[in-house]
Length: 336
Image 1 (tube, rainbow, N blue to C red):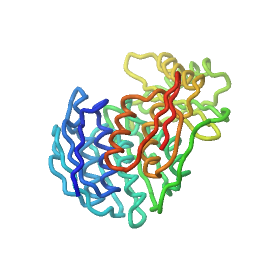
Image 2: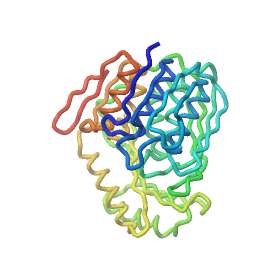
Image 3: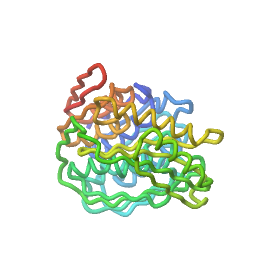
Image 4: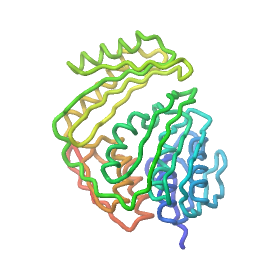
C-alpha cells in the first residue's frame, strides 16, 4: 500500500496534524510519513505529549514506527491491527492528556473488544481542550453518533505541574451515524464553575461574583481540590442547548486579577451567544474527524480557522471523501 506523505508545516503547523494522522492511520490501516513536524511552533518537532500519543498508538495497533524521538521533525508510522486492551500512558509533564486520549479513542471505537485507557499529565492546560470540555461537550455528541464510551476525570492536573489523569472505558461500535448540527436552539441552562487547587478560596468567589455581573442568574459552582492537584485555577462557563453543550474556559495566572479572568471569559461567551454559529471554533476542530468517519454530517461554525482547514486536508489524505465548506459573513457550514 502506498505511503501517505504528510507535510507537518502546512496550515497552522501544529501537533493536530500528527494526532489526526495517527488516528486515521490506525483506523484505515494506511501507513504515513510526516515531515517538518510542528514546524509552525516555537519549539518544532516531537515533544513529550506528542511522543506519548505516538507510543500509545503504536501499542494499540502494534505499529512499526521510525523517528519517534524527542525533537524529531520526521517520522514514519506503519500500523497493524487495532487491539482492545487495558492501557495506561503517562506523559510525565503537564502536556495535554485529553489530546492524547482523543488521538487513540477513535481507533478503540473499532477495536475487537472492550478497552479501558488512562492517560496521566495535564487535564486543564490553556493550550488544549480541558477535560470538562471533552466530557461535557465532545463526548455527548460522539455518543449520539453511536459511540459507546464513558470518560472520567480522575484527578486534575494544571500547567506546569501536571499530575492529572483522565480515563475512559469504550466498547466497539459497528459504524458511526451521521451528525447534523445546524441549529443550537434556545439556551436551557448556564453554569459557571471555578476550579481551584492550592489557591485561596476567595479567588473562586471573586471570579464567580464577576461572571455573575455579566450573566444574571447564572448557576455557580466552586470545585475545590487539594494542593496535590495544583497549584492551578480555571474558570469555566457551560452553556446547555437542546442540540449540544458548549464549554468555555479561562485560566488564572500569577499577577492576573480574578476579575480579569472572568472578564476575558465573559467576552468569549458573549461573542458566541450573539453569533449565528452552532459549534464554536474549538469544538469544530474536534468534530470533523468523527463526522468524516461516519461519512456524512454537517455543522455550522465560525469562519474556517487555519487549524480546521489543516485538519480537513489531513483527513482527505486518508479517506475518499470531500468536505463542502460554505462560508458566509459571520459563519461557515461544514458538511460531507
